[in-house]
Length: 364
Image 1 (tube, rainbow, N blue to C red):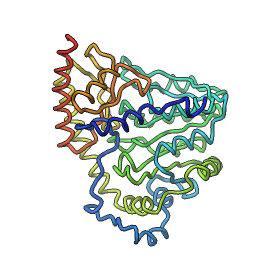
Image 2 (image 1 turned 90 degrees about the vertical axis):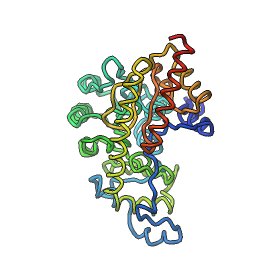
Image 3 (image 1 turned 120 degrees about the horizontal axis):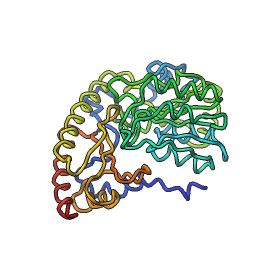
Image 4 (image 1 turned 90 degrees about the horizontal axis):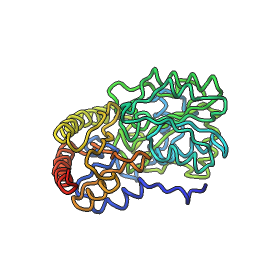
């Protein structure tokens, strides 16, 4: 398989529909803060003074790794690609729980790996079964791919479950890659997974929790031998983070407490609004309430395919959500509660009205 044969349908969907969007319930990253209000300098002419500082050192201090084990790159999706492409070859066996973020399973497919999917179902409350995953790892397993918190369900992986999976992988000589882009949203998140062993690679990003999508700063943390392979691949892909991104990234890390407080307060308020929305619209949708990110994966109870449901929401009502098909799990949609609470409330009110009308159209 080649990259031309594997479409990034989620990205295409978002890009093609943003111009029609009045109510955005599809963006998974927290709405961007005011950099000026946070006291962050944005004048590129002053970027040279920030170059003397090391973004990798700042990330290492916060996330518990020496700079030699940290690589910065242009966003978390690139980090996912680098981690998988530097460790997986054609014919390798890759184990992944599903549903999941498309690049987590598409990149191994493109590379010719054999994908072993462990299904997480709505009936099982989308909970990752660590015992099942650990038992499924064998000496033929090259890589285990996890996302914490899960995208699209918004559910966190518990620390003890990560430990169990990491131990099973280590016993079989397998690697573990944990995409931790949404880890910090959880009220009590698991520690950074890299600390579970030299066979574990962690990824993170400033796009989602920090709300800094425009600067495209992602990172990987890995044992030096693995990191050397990742760095070698990255030299052919993106070389280094741009000057402006570097400057904003370092300042954001210096003011991390401000970002933490803003994001956690907004997440708590928005999840409360989302909970009430689900309660009021129980005839049309239901969900497993997320505990690790400000988005969930509601089940559609209206007799309508999820693709049609999401298309009608954007075409008829200007409401953008993401179909479950893009996570290989039809019958659901990803509902993101990441805008300001005022915008989120207005969007959910509009979605409530749309659900009423769609239920009527479908004869429910």
